[in-house]
Length: 168
Image 1 (cartoon, rainbow, N blue to C red):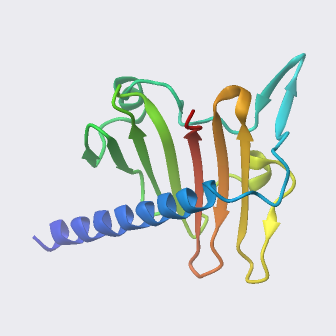
Image 2 (image 1 turned 90 degrees about the vertical axis):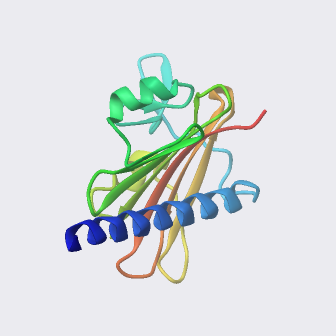
């Protein structure tokens, strides 16, 4: 019974962290970035590709069934979003539109453990604030999505990476 309560508490904390990450990202989406609309592309021959466009094989536009096939059974499953708890340090939230297509992928790394370096997500430039937190949002208008990297300053800290469809 104690093990079950501990699991529930961990899941509740994970969902809370994901919710905070989604709120921070949603709040910053409407703000103008201090950095120009990004050119964080990786050259691959003559094709330009975003540095970070998918998580564990899941990308914007996939169906819920395709995303679940890549990620496995979620801790919490719904028509509009799924929550995954991969470890105590890594959790993800996948949001779906009414057509059950992926419109947002938000990943939280507690303490930054396991998170990719920001340069692999949004390129070499990032806004570092006086408190040590970091943030950058890169819009890929032509591809219809944006990617953000957010690291909190508070210990143990949290890195949130979000890929979201641009609302058109």
